[in-house]
Amino acid sequence: MLSNSPAPGNDGIYCDFRMIRRLGQRFATLFRAVTPDPFVLAIGLTAVVFALAITVEHATPTEILRAWQDDAGLWSLLAFAMQMAIMLVTGHALAEAPVVRRALARAANLPTSPRTAAALVALVAMLAALLNWGLGLIVGALFAREVGRSAHARGIRLDYPLLVAAGYTGLVCWHGGLSGSAPLKVTQTKDLVEVLGPTLGAQLGSISLHRTVFSWTNAVVTGGLVVLIPTVCALLSPRDGERVDTFPMGGLPATPEVAAPGAAAQRSFASRVESSRAFAALVVVPLAAATWMVWRERGLARLDPNAINLLFLTLGLLLHGSVDRYVAAVGTAASGTAGIVLQFPFYGGIMGVMRATGLARTLAGNLAKHVSATLLPAATVVSAGVLNMFIPSGGGQWAVQGPIALESAMALGVPPELVVLGVSYGDELTNMMQPFWALPLLAITGVRARDILGYTVVVMLAAGAWMLVALTAITAFYLAH
Image 1 (cartoon, rainbow, N blue to C red):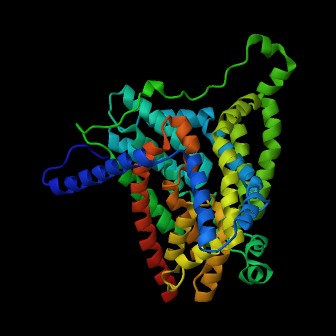
Image 2: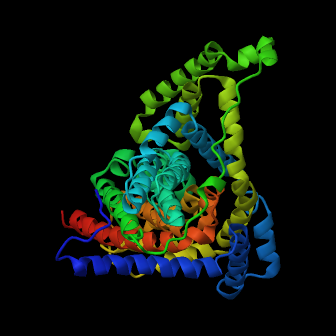
Image 3: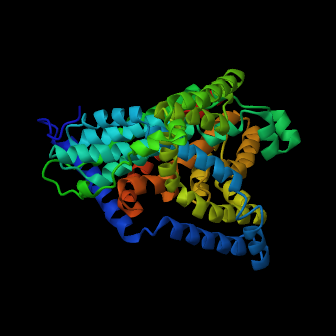
């Protein structure tokens, strides 16, 4: 267990720890001063892309507007947005299930210091995100809030924005888990044909999850993150006597409770059906059978986003125990999709302009250009991280960068799964700087994006260093053998 008191003879080490804490405070102060609302950021990125399309690709304003507003632009992500919204809603609803919430409440009493609190919140968020990014995001938010409340009640002074930032760290490892868009999008040949064309797609074939998510490469990189990031969050925590930025815990939004039906309502046939466990079981049984059929036929190595959504829909309804409770949880979760509904069209527009004008290929290609085979996966991480700032959607980004990454890997003789993981790591890395996916977390915890970004940027720097070093070393090993 981490302690707040320095051990004798370790003054130099604890001085370094204080430097890390001060670095986090300085970043936090800076980002609170300069960070706009995420929707403003989406508009600003749109303006940047318009300017780059004109100056770099020499596109005309008419060409840019046409690419921005048509079906391949503003409205290109409607189906994907629905898929992502369902993933978020089912993950949120599962996290709100009574058994899950009771487990969170019990676990919230475990930390005994600011450091253990931050480390535990980060660890829980990351482990949950490896199962499902939406589950990790919501569990991280709920757990951060519960730990904050518990610490406040026990007189433990902690930096609440840091705790919330720790709850967001699941988004720095999610793409190496079961719901990772890029690994899931290459498990079937038809998906590769869709992004690479029939000749190259058929030549490459499918890339199973055994070569990506369940590979030893991902075990090293993502496993290292699960150890590193909670440690960084702990080191960013205040020591005794240091000033902290606290939030009034009593003023935080309460976790919604599903109201029990009234006596009059209980007498109606409709309400009895809605609250009936037997009726819920009638729904769960076919859902569970369909889930089992999909998982049996595809196995863990061939899961796609729809299979993940089906699993969490089944588990959520099962654990809530009745239709009315699940509907109420879904209703609560749906409010967190407002950012997706509002901002996805703008990011679709950005994506449309980048594709139609050739800017995406120029950006992704130049960032990974003129590198050796050993450095290609690391260069892919960097280019994916930059691209993620403009296209903060794993699936959408894969559609843009996937063909370039795979073509480069095949040309240089690099195992294609390494660049798939490179895209995955780069996409998740700059989530710590792109507040798009933090919107539900911010609503649950009652903080603003600018309050947590200073800390998440420090997390991003640490995670990025580990990703680049580990992936380069692993690539060198692959090529040597």
